[in-house]
Image 1 (cartoon, helix red, strand yellow):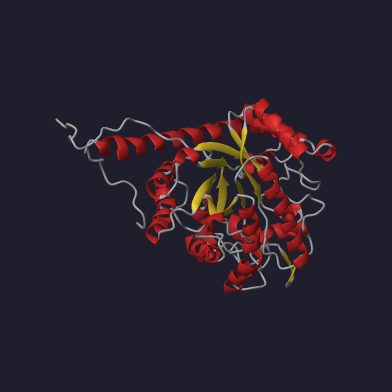
Image 2 (cartoon, rainbow, N blue to C red):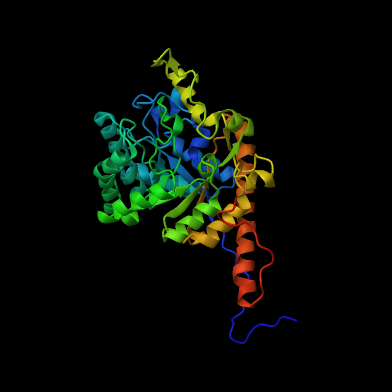
Amino acid sequence: MNTPSPQRAVRDFEPKLMKLSVLTAALQELTPRDRREADPDVAVEEWLQFAHELDCPHIELSAALHPTESDVPAAALLDPVANTLDLRRPFTAARAARVHRAMHAAQVGISDLAYFDNMLAPDESVRERKRALMLRVFDAAVLLGTNAVAGFVGRNPLLEMDANLAMFEEVFVPLLKEAKARGLTFRVEQCPMPGWNVSDKWHNNIAYAPGPWIALHQICERHGVGDQFRIHYDPSHAILMGQDSRSVFQYLKDRGYNFLISGFHVKGQVIDARGISAWGYGGQTMQRGDFRGTKPSPDPVAAQNAWKKQTVFSEHELPGTARHDPLAYLQNRSVDWLDHQLAARELLAIEPENTFLVVEHEYPPARVQDKARLKPILHASIAFTRAIDAAAAAMYALQHEVLASQGIATQGIGRQAYRS
């Protein structure tokens, strides 16, 4: 019979769950555009109420350049962004007070603000327009009482990677200094954005993996903004690049950088073995339809074909929409959600109870822009995410706290990093 050692304090079972949120781009036109143009903040009010109906306690509030101001037409985007938060006019204290009242009425909070764009755009005037919006997002985040903004770094596609590091230091570090002045953290999502342009370049966001994150963080540290640079980790992008979350987290821990990840987008990826057989992980490299002859097509609809660099072998998963597939998990061709949540607790320097899981919906067949149809889909996915996190929290507490406190070994081996 196992008895507690007198030197050990028996731990109670106290699982710590992460905080749930949902990105408002899941339903871009929840509030019809004509109503939003006349009264922009009604879109935020209605999304807060929608989140309440979804049993989701927070929203990740999406901002973007207005369609009339964007340099990339919506027709050229794989996953169109949402300007739920319209910042063409200053976000004043009065506007913030209205949103706070809506938050109180719906009993829904804001996890963070999000503006996903290429902050290293090659055209200086375009880049300045994006920078100006990002600063307005920073100011709105402060007024809304959140301490983080999520987004991309991006890439200047006219420059090679080392030159982009220099551009990051010149262009992006000043943005982080603005974030620091406001008490904010900038969480970078690691999507490589292969279809962002019609060139053969695949990595169009330089912050796409742990190696680059460390290089960028070292630059930030030299300028006193290391604490402002964090990662908003999305496991779908790891699968897209043949990685698994446990190995990514282990690598960060091995290098002493497991503090970098401070939030999560909860989105999966399902790899199509036929597409991999045809094109490999670089995706479709020719005859995509984004060129007219030997020149890029001037048609923005044709430009969307650049995303075949990704979509020819993969499809985004809304958590819970992909079948349980242990073989695919071991091949890194689908997200092993339970191990993802368990590995985050085992390997990352996070406090789960203060960490957000933001459900992001980009599964194309289910991206219906009709509230009545989308509501049960999102509701179910959010419930799935909550249940998976609860299971991982229970496993971690049982194995690493309760059993460990009594000197009882955990059974088996489990999934291991770097296995192939």
